[in-house]
Length: 114
Image 1 (cartoon, helix red, strand yellow):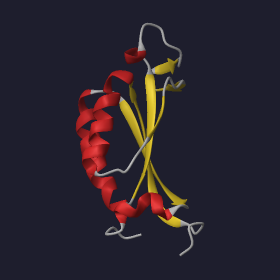
Image 2: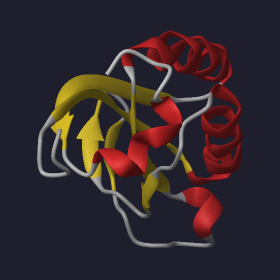
Image 3: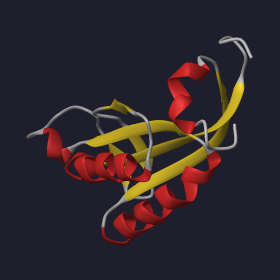
């Protein structure tokens, strides 16, 4: 398979308060995610109304989005941990199918079904 070939994976997107970001980072590392991307200070509107992305007091009073690309078998452990967090804190998680190139970035998943 060339490095430009597409391989199927899952994208887990998580929106949480800035104060919970460190908990979500630890959860993903413990679950075995090889990496993630953080988008700080997101804005939007939901069932709690509008939320502005700019900092009012500090980065703990913002919403952040974190996303990670993982094999399918890591999704359930991540969702279990997020479920426990979101019982006590606000947040949202989305899981979608994605196809990625650069398989070498995902070599640690060689024993997972790619």
